[in-house]
Image (cartoon, rainbow, N blue to C red):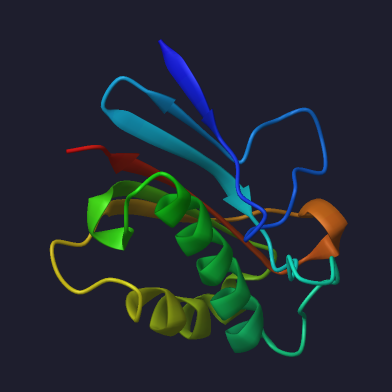
Length: 126
């Protein structure tokens, strides 16, 4: 059985998908970009702030499901420029304390709304 997770504390989907879906003991969180849920505007001040906004959006969805970054077992980072990897990795790492999730980071040619970073996660419900 699956359950759709939705929160107003993260951006509303911009297409036919859910913010997250709980299936069994897993929560699959859709890729988040740097849309500020308070005003619907992109937060593209710089790559560091963009990454913080993405992580805040992920955190909001996780919290709605009663979870935190400690529950994340897998993440995928999409970058429009692998040259920003160090900055994104630095910010991303601030949201995890230990037992880091498995992860891949890939460069893609274009991301939705021409953002620079998108991150999706899979979390375990314990």
